[in-house]
Length: 343
Picture 1 (cartoon, rainbow, N blue to C red):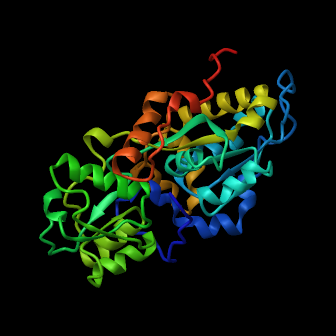
Picture 2: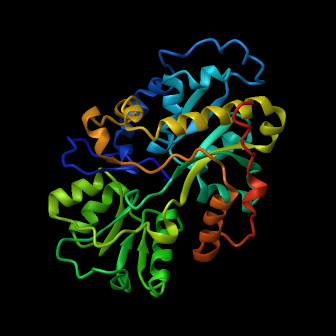
């Protein structure tokens, strides 16, 4: 996501709470940042792993489900077992972290790939991906329409006004891809920037014909005025699209190879555990305020346990095809391969 979205207060009802949606408790996170910087397992790095160059590595993150594994790694001692005791800092957007990454105030950031590839192409950031973070699924983002909308198929979006949160972001790129794959001119709709929390009202009042939103705003729209989901946005060619990952500057990577390897091992293990809803239930309530009982029903994206340049190249191709990138980038040149499992 491109920025932090403050959810309106109130009890979330309904059976459908979604992936990126879990950001509903952004305010809670910002007022209780210590949740991310301490756990029952924090403390002195484990013996045998104290050779990392920077044990107290500083990690910048956004408040989204993408980073649930970071909290899981703190809670369950995954970082500690790798000789790490990270300091986690919260930021409002991916690009807002880049200056601190470049000047060394941050060592690692978890950010969306669109902003990252744009920064690399513009040569404003010399950084590489050290671990994959989060991937999209058909329920990660949802296209919503008013209850009596004539929009039933992608072709019906031609000439319509669609809320996409920010120009050129992943939402707009996914929409353009969907339209093109259905033989609809991607330029035929009007894309307007409306923040995710404001989309339900924009739909209800007729400011837009459709909106791409996430939870809890999907549930709010469907509950309050009967908004509909006419067809999936992420599907076929875009299913499993990489959304975000962990990056570090080339300078930090070169100076801290053991720290990077330790971080990679920790993220891979935490991402693997995050596939279990019982594991997510340990951290999502503190991160989001969602009751533990609702965690099994959340529509969560996927947490990759590999770092595949072919997958990341899909984002580059999407950007070059539908906007946001004109430079040729090779994802293979922008990753740090994961260390062997038993190293």
